[in-house]
Image 1 (cartoon, rainbow, N blue to C red):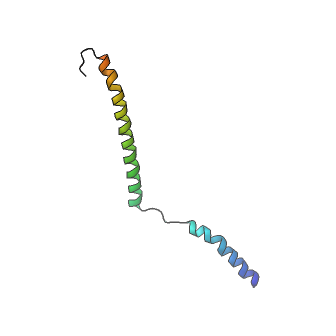
Image 2 (cartoon, helix red, strand yellow):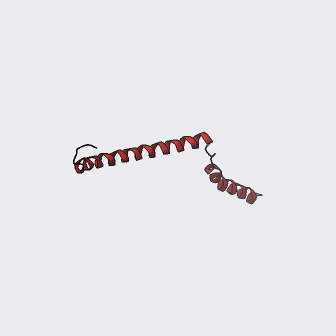
Image 3 (cartoon, rainbow, N blue to C red):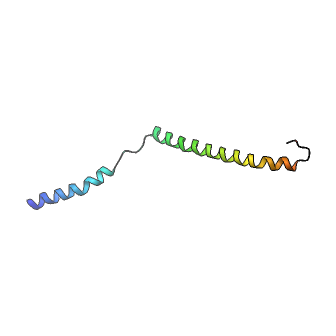
Length: 70
């Protein structure tokens, strides 16, 4: 009888961390908000990069245009 209780206690102790590791999946709203945040962040990064490249390209284009108009 004591062995049976001991085995049960061991099983409970082994299963407890596995059960506590399980968590509920995020809801649609949570996933949507996360995706929206990631997309907005990436869009801002791309816009900043494009503006930087446009600013670097503008002086070289003006120098190559003999009329001075762009």
